[in-house]
Image (cartoon, rainbow, N blue to C red; front, top):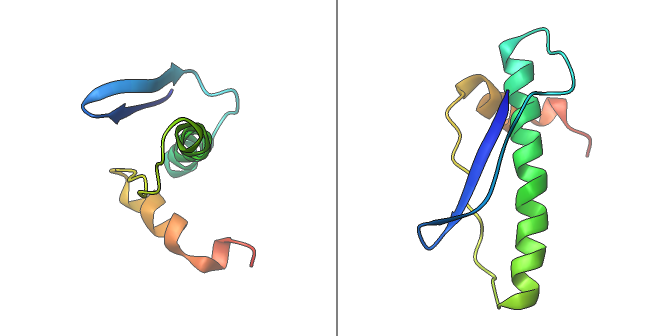
Length: 80
């Protein structure tokens, strides 16, 4: 199951809750796929909000899985 919610001014502006279309072998892999979907939505939301209002502030993403946080921050797993 993948799910996220984005708020602006305390109100939900975008959310998703769905079954993942790909089977993950490990919980960390499933969580990584979920955060990837959320980040894709962040990119779209930032572009959309920048067009209708001057939004230059960074968007904060809160996440609670430490394994995925370490995997995301480790440059060994990403192309340069």
